[in-house]
Length: 382
Image (cartoon, rainbow, N blue to C red; front, side, top):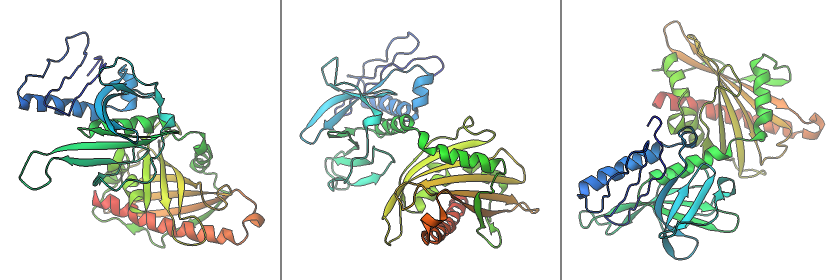
């Protein structure tokens, strides 16, 4: 797009009529599609949807895009109304269909998970974060071959005093809302202890860690070379094997940030937040988890991936941190193997932890074995 400025994308999916308003470097707006052929309308809608799907919060800032405005169906617990939702980096505003001004801006910081899901719709995708699901609804007959059908994609948001449900005619707008929310949250200061732990380990200061080597012999990864391992780990989004590993090990609402080279150089940092389902026992059934990964710079013979983790809802959560070092090594024949080092950083007093120290150690060791196997499987399946 260069220096072009997108001021507003206005979509109407409820009827054949659709008006796309684009401002690009002072040029005129796109033609009115009210009387355009159906195939032309579809092409314009598809083009706008692709643009919506490609817009991230950072791009809104870098390209001086002020807002994206999309028509949608809105319910606040009662009847449905047609409104416009105006999306910005700061938050969103709901505007009546024929009004110039809408509600006050709702910042993304006030958006949280919607809680229990209603049972009516059929879920086809579950994104992370507060826009907990995009639900594909069928309008018209669901019988094969009789009657036209169209999709509605639904996003739900829980605010401090109410719950809002939005329905769109395409997946792009709710996915954009998801990315804007994620970008606004950031991992925050709570991950600073994890960054401090990683910084010390990267400098070789591991004297305060209880270190265990996971595999007696490195785990072979057949079919992979060292370049493929680095390429896969360097990805962002759902194609990253780390994200798929978390999802495969009973993690829910996985939220990740793109790799960042400025936080802990040299190398790259990637943040994850998720809810981890825990095995049965006397403790909680689930816990929130923060994880920070560090990918060391390029090395032709190995890939080193560090990880620091903190659970937030388990007993003695403030008395330990977990560290992992994943070593993907290249053999003389070009094959790759994985070895993992587990480190436990005991922050609290040993007397305070008592017998629970062994429980924490055993549970963490079991989790490391499972996640290591899942990560290797995700790498090989890509």
